[in-house]
Image (cartoon, rainbow, N blue to C red; front, side, top):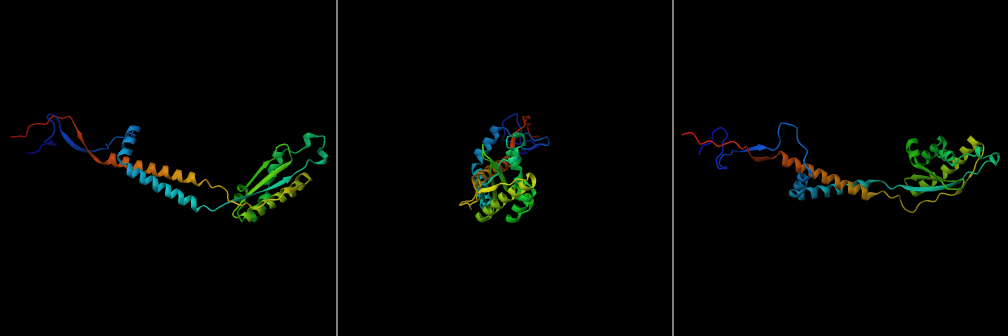
Length: 228
């Protein structure tokens, strides 16, 4: 049996069956949720493998992160004698907390942690003890000993800086101790994120495979009888 003008035998009467690519020259339409779920069901093995690979990559990234340790020194900054009975002359704890990020403090932390000033400032955090004149100064280091030494130096430098700025000092009343364990790195977040990204990559690959593969379509054109 012959075929003319693109007509193919074997289809239902009055219809023409052709093979066309799933994509068209017009703008591609985004797949619906139902289509995505259908692709995921058909290519579940591919999606699962991609998710596992993503989780393994996330685990490798989390495992490659160096451990960080945090130590805290407690600093007492008493009310100046000249401010007794004059609340408006008493520095607020917020003002005193800014001393932790003063240039001399950051420079000392950078020296101990062997980092640049921007990185050193990011490693410092400070909080005030409510209803007191105490500041907790925390510094992150690469080793327990480095973290403790940096926090202790930061506390002493805060006291010295207050002397220069406000002409009154203070004291480090809580010595920084070397921590026993590193900071929590939230490795599970990295692993789960890697798995989700891998699953998304698998779904994308499966969707592209379905959309770019040729699929039979019925055009609805009448099938003419072959010429004699």
